Length: 337
Image (cartoon, rainbow, N blue to C red; front, top):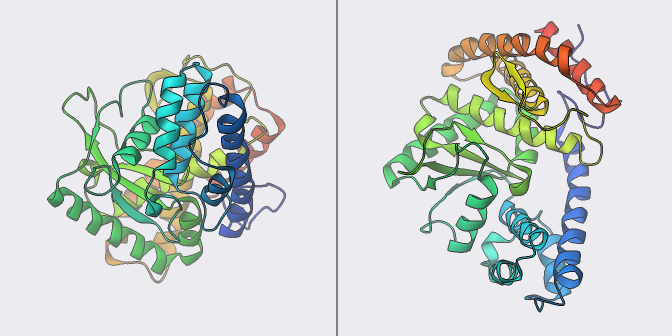
């Protein structure tokens, strides 16, 4: 089965970096319109704007792309407005206005950032923690890693991404178009459970990585590819949903025994297919690093994960036309590997 790009889809399992950059132009405009509405219209009668329209445009519309911190600030302001919390809106809009200049825009290439006030401003840390907060407790208590843990994680991320770029430069470029910030953290003392990584549209451009889960360059690469695939899927349905199923966590699949919404099952299958695709391409490349052999196990486990999820999706998914198109590609990718 051919693995050549399907240009009919706005985004695909094999999309290129340029397609992602074009879609991000629209994301940037949406972010600006939403912040402008929140600050200068929705809340203006209760909270005087903390920054001018010119200042907001500089944050959101000027180059480079807005940072994940600005996206996370937007999410905080939206929640404050939706819950009619003028006090929180005032606090968070002032924090957005006061962000250090270095936190306004995304870097040109992925960088690592410690979720700690020795690396980011207090406001940035708080915005990111709230953006990554999940509803089942995996990321409810996040702390920054120690210097030793951060150095070790940075080494592993560096090896993973350099090997990725060496072996698959086009896929590395796609990753760099999706991810600009790799946030290094770990579960805090109040955490009930651990996690490997996390991605949310509320902090678009950032992936959260648990430094305690990084064991090797191969595992690190698979974690990063997994999280970037979530970012890609977010871009697939900015307007049109993929599924019409309700959000009740009623679906159990071999990927995760806990009931979850069908969208979660679909996301898990999509990112597993992306991991398998990248692992397979790395194994076939003539320029892969020595540690690439470890990816064979990830390739097989990722293919198995997709195959395990397919029956659950086929039995219960209520797809939109876009979702059906994406699912066909997901299934054909799994069959081709």
